[in-house]
Length: 283
Image (cartoon, rainbow, N blue to C red; front, side, top):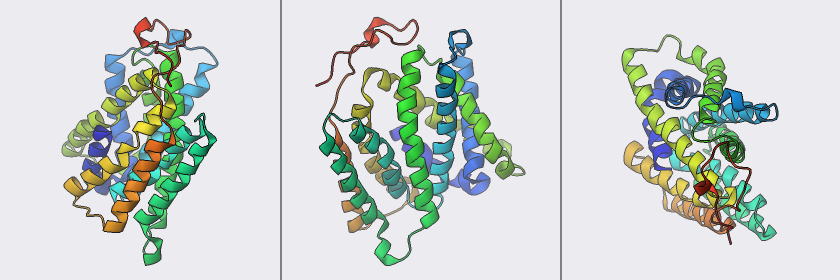
């Protein structure tokens, strides 16, 4: 989460130069090169039913990256993260064993309203819409990442899905970035690609092999707070008292939506996956 939000905060200047899609395309392209270098794509292990999930995860990764960068171009980082967090929060609530968990999605929505303070009349509708689109992409990403992590061992799945994401982002990113590329820009994009997608995508896949997506979504409740802190420290975006209350509501809603731990033991895990990846049932 720290890597994602630091990478997002440090991408703001690059977004000003290349645009959201151009920045996403460069970061995902560098990420694809890294994953192809460190993990051979398990092409022989792919079965026909795997193809839709692999393609969908690649497209979702591109979608959430472009949409989120477009959002932070228009609204504060902490606000964008809080809206985007509605995606994994909804996943956690819907898959909860208790239907009352859905109430916490409403609590988070109240927090988002406090963050945007629409009564002031200066809400950036496009920024909110892009953050909402990122929320949909993030929810899809979580569900599909767990499925791909279960199916392929190591980082093999990412060596397929991240290149798909890079190709998807290229359709929008190349026109935006054209004419703005320089050695300095390429170097900055390479560094940012390590913060996002390389490090967090790898860690998230490893985490989702061992956890339920409900537990994962619950722990992600910390992300809006991390985004708020890094927005303050890196971008000097100072929240108001009302916005702080909004962030607290979002974080509390995420933490309360679903408690969970390790996943049920699953004998149909990733190909050649070590037995240590099989977890005990969660409470």
